[in-house]
Image (cartoon, rainbow, N blue to C red; front, side, top):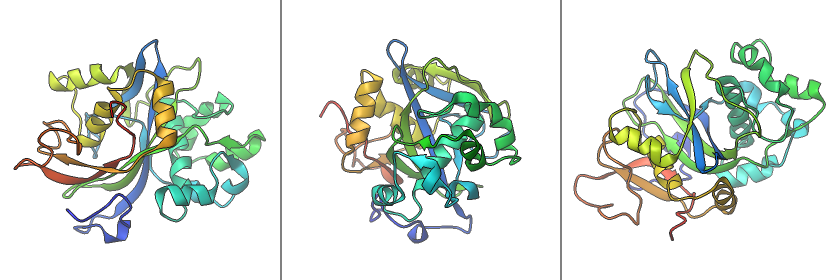
Length: 276
């Protein structure tokens, strides 16, 4: 895995026969009054990362790729999305990020009527499509507040594998999240440092994509600072680990990044380190 970069085509990734599905995750940030992030606890019986603390997200659905989004979404054109992620039909990741946030925590990312959240369970059950809801509302979905910050591919072996792009966005003003009770049993706000402390104390279970994101966010002071940095972006940095569950993620500038016992993972972040 040493030779892969952040833009490796999914078809070139190693596989053991488990299909690698495209997915999107959203890191919602807010000042409450200090910088906080929204985290979920997945139900223990979940096939994938059961009982873990995660961010809202899930697999890309067919409707997220509907050509109708060309007129139903603003803020990120199809060409801009493809250029940012260096894949075709990349805007589907932005749409999936919005849809999954509605379904899992009942919040609508971006400047749009929060009434869309009232359809969260119907969306989750496949009884209605997000493109239909947005078309009926008469107001396009604004994607300009969503910024891609990292890419993570589930390692082998795993019952499910995902090629996941992480996005950061500001939480809707005056709204409070609620877990869907199906995939997630708890939704709460926490400081990045507080979540990491809970993990170190054994109170929370996380894997390296969540840990690495919280480690990077822990050095930011406000939501504005995070979003400004995410909008600017940076050069992708590949993460290394010793143990995906039990040790912190390592970034290229960290002491011990290439020590014996470390190994590269299929994870890259381009959210800049504000200390550098």
